[in-house]
Image (cartoon, rainbow, N blue to C red; front, side, top):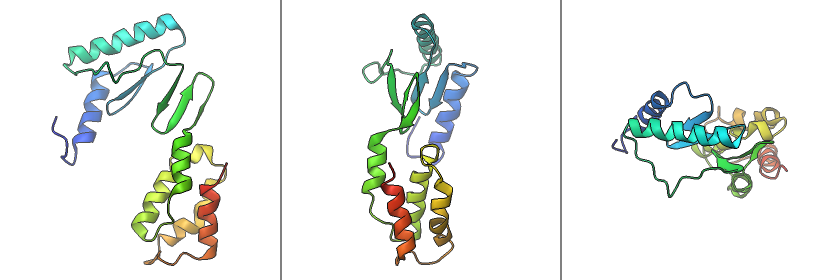
Length: 158
């Protein structure tokens, strides 16, 4: 499938979901497939099922980039194991190191990135009120003290 076209990711996602439909033990995001199993034997069987489905659909698998039998994985900015799901510290550090937004577009990007981790940031919506209110303005260039404090609260939240 040619990349660069506007709808290519959506089409690819839909195709992958059709190929792997009705498999309750997977999560698919584009070419990232997460297979979760309760036992080692189940995991072997689940991997075989997924690999066979992909082969039947002529989807090439890069086994060098693939990881199997992992007790913990990084997936979509999260670290997942059999006990918990937590934010990937690398992504959290990225938030901490972001420059303050200087325009509406940068503020939207910042809010989108931070909002992805809303399950790990208590009272996030309360902290974001001054920032989302700023989206209604035409000018973000001059961020007042309250808004900068909210950004720092988010960036350095532990």
